[in-house]
Length: 169
Image (cartoon, rainbow, N blue to C red; front, side):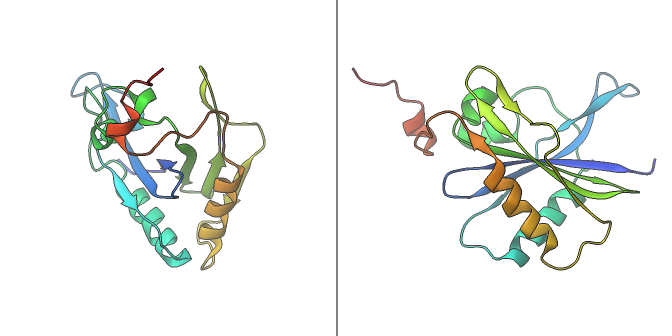
């Protein structure tokens, strides 16, 4: 089967560390594919990084799509932060949807995270690039999507052990 589409979930913390989770097949049985979803692979890029680092990181994440299948249970981000819940693991993280379509090229889409609704993606905020973007173009598009991504919630401490402590009164 030729792959004509790949997508990566990008989560970014307040220190601008980028967490990338490639997509893979989500199966009910060995023969029944029900869709595409994030798999148990996590790539991390910490500051300081250059535009070249961003582009290499994003290309690597796209190239790792479909290398694994979705497994039941907590996902890669939940495991990394030590939470059982995706909601808790993504608290305080911005989200960018990154995809590649074989006949069209690369796309990035910023999101807005609102309390009790999760991530929403405003209409008409796609950033499109050709199949072979020029050097630096993908990094510029990523930085633009990051600037457009919003959190409508307070950013908690990124340390998972401190984020999970109950608030004292």
